[in-house]
Amino acid sequence: MRVVGLSAEDDFEGWRDAARALAAARVPPSEIVWQVGDQPVDLFGDEAVPQSTAHPFRVPRAFLDLAQAVILHSDPQRFALLYTLLAGLIEQPKRIEDRADPLVRRLEEKAKAVHRDIHKMRAFVRFREIEDDSGARYVAWFEPEHHIVRANARFFADRFANMRWSILTPELSIHWDGAALAEGPGATKAEAPAGDPIEDVWKTYYASIFNPARLKTGAMLKEMPRKYWKNMPETALVKELVAGARQRETAMVQTARTAMGGNIAGAWEKLRDEAMGCTRCHLYRHASQTVFGEGPVDARMMFVGEQPGDQEDLAGHPFVGPAGQMFNRAIAEAGIERAGVYVTNAVKHFKFEQRGKRRIHSKPDAGEISACRWWYEQERLLIRPEMTVALGATAARQILGKAATITAMRGRALELAEGGLGWVTIHPSFLLRMPDRERAAEEYAMFVEDLKGAAKTLSS
Image 1 (spheres, rainbow, N blue to C red):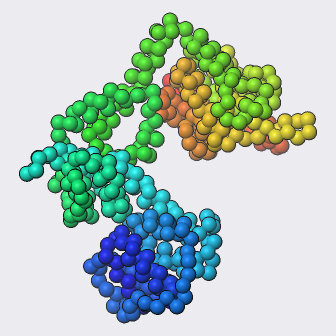
Image 2: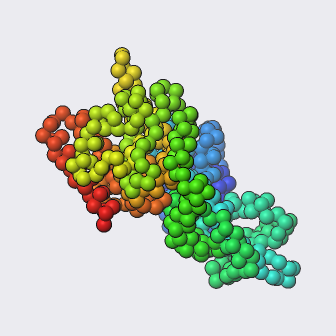
Image 3: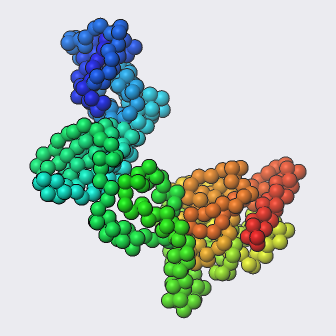
């Protein structure tokens, strides 16, 4: 058994040199123990790293790039995993290109996690001013998930070259005196300053630029996890701003309506006319026309389908084909008046495959749904529905901003990030495709019950 001692958790050069010598000597991964710093030495490890390079080899540059990132990960097994891949590349140099390879995929996920942590440190570090013997110094506290502090030090030195600063973390600290970087031991949060007068200015600025119309709480939490909030002065305002976002947005919309003389119908017509020339994705090249939403601009309920079908594409109106007729019958049975609701689609152009003279419906992909989201958001901003019903998975993805299954979301009220309630059910075309008429009748009855549930929730 061979024991390899590394000087630090992020000692890439030490790992690389040892791995190169071991791989050249064709030492199998199972015979190597990787240890860092002052960890206890393995009792059965008694062989040094070989100096011979009797079997020279080359590895792809992509592997070195991957290894540099993965070494910074917090997984204790990362050194052994990287060496295992290195040993495999000697016999299969192309293995690094196989994204289906479990080991390659596992290491790439670790590299992505490291890059995300590097980004979060750059985004969420907040300096606070203190005074020391040499004047003003700016100190920040950060808790990384991985061993990224040294790798990130140069970024902060370049970014804040004209100020003296320190970044304290549990593992180590880095300091910049205006000319050179220095390292120090790890610290505790208690050693970092709690606040300074600059934060009041920053909070005022943040509150003034906060736009409730663009608030997407889920996306915000994904990019700015709560664990970092305690270190950022502006996040003390987030709870209050989010709580008041709905009221502020309503006020903004009302102001816009007043500025337009209350002519929401006119604003909607302008939006529809603009959509007629939409080229946000490639679907416009083959469809006959944009099929925009229709209905009263003060509708309390909005229905969102997948996309126009063949007949809708030719007519220029949503829900007029076979699925639209099924929809009309179902909402009538549910006690909902078609004339009182707004109907639209997640995607405004017909996507199809040409088979002879027939145009066969083709499901929109994520990029096409995303490209059309702007139009959907503008419709919602004008209509301001209290209830938005998604008909099918494509519509659910549009109103929720993420992929969703009908089974998981069906038949219950969902709070939408932009305000109002959401409701997910099947698309009526699903019923038309069912060959078993008895099963189709059962599904139709469930569809009507879903619609009744949405209407009842809206009325309560």
